[in-house]
Image (cartoon, rainbow, N blue to C red; front, side):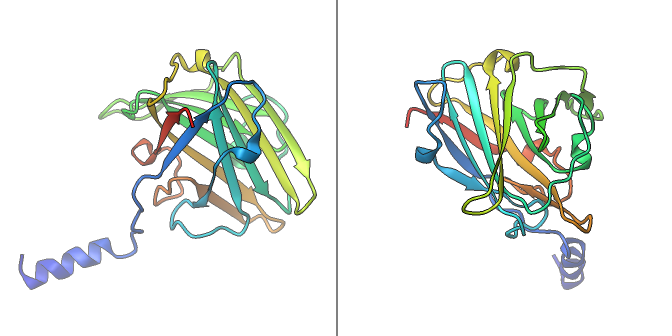
Length: 222
């Protein structure tokens, strides 16, 4: 490659974020239905484009039982914004936490679960066949989904979101050593209407639907 080609290549790459390797999480097995979250490892979300530390931090913990995947978002939040009240309302237009799950790990189909600060759910099934536009199926509902939202004021103001996602709804049951591809997101709006987009595995754009950037979620016994 000659000098002019090198320069051209550098110009094309200018402004594109350098994405980190895909993150990995060891999801611990528990024997009961009520997780003791204090003993479960946490991961933090970062800016979805740059990977920088966000203004409002989010810690996430997860564990699993024989029947259910539990996911907990612990969100710093000084301004809660969400007008939505009905299932499958466009929750992503306001404050929301989101979980995308690809059980096959191939990027061709995955589930989306959104939860608002008022415990309203949006769920969808997405197909992503090669050479075709993604197809969204918001008419799909997770029949056994359990969720909760709680507000905590000490030691700082936080909103705690919890999902209990039944494996029967995902039509897949993991075992020790199983790896799924998952990404975790949050949208937070401040008092001025400025929106912050964060992710466990940054995608390099304000776009959550990038299955090749889903992190590696490994189910373990410890």
